[in-house]
Image 1 (cartoon, rainbow, N blue to C red):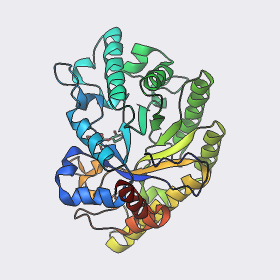
Image 2: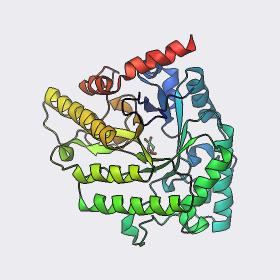
Image 3: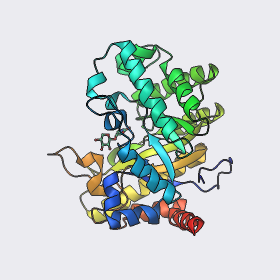
Image 4: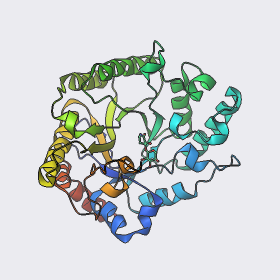
Length: 341
Ligand code: XIL
């Protein structure tokens, strides 16, 4: 059973979930937070190539199997993240000859997608393909994938994924498309060009994933009209939208905790509402269960961030109530659990 809405009905229930790790399942409180809030989950790193590929090059799906089994046993939509990302290439293949790289990347992809066929609701097939600073006219990031598969590598990777699982929703995932800046606008236009070209060649791209790593102190002052208009143009291409890695970096806001949390909560509501009003929004994923596990707090020596909707003790923050009011995810989870009885 999938919660992903098929209708264009804007009032359709929108699945909600967290990025999770196997270790979360060992903690009863974190496990309960997932089952209380979620109708979907995304492996934060255990589906990535470098997490699955052993030092000897063999593929080990133990961690991902555990997360997939948990999702299936609890009727949670399972979003696979991510099949093709320059940030998750195993060490042994980073400097491989293009032909060897292509074989290894294709083998990981087809094994992973084939293994979870019927279990995965969507795959983030290609992640962060654009990097305009690399100077290519098409804006593509210069990666080993581009070198090994050629300028239309995104088409090839999507065709490969579709061949391995014709049912999964296939997503192209990108960062920095949400911002109010000339660089973000150039990136949005490059993404439109990428989508038009790939879809024009028949590539099975169903959705665009907006990573949505927002910065609170910038969001309030920003004008979001260009982003909203761009969402409309994405929809005119027949491409739906997922919010795939939502978090809101609160560093740099006023230090009064109540005001800061209220500010962040308002941005959670405003951003998700803006996307829902301007696109066919298929799912919303917050990038972690609680502030202490946020990837923004992995780098030592930086001021800690409180970017998520549950705090370090899993307590519900104002942002949790705002999102629940918007998406009724608590009720969605009840529907999910009722489906199991
Ligand atoms: C991050 C994870 O959150 C970290 O735990 C991991 O160490 C590195 O990757 N954009 C992405 C995600 O697409 O895969 C990244 O996740 C965060 C940025």
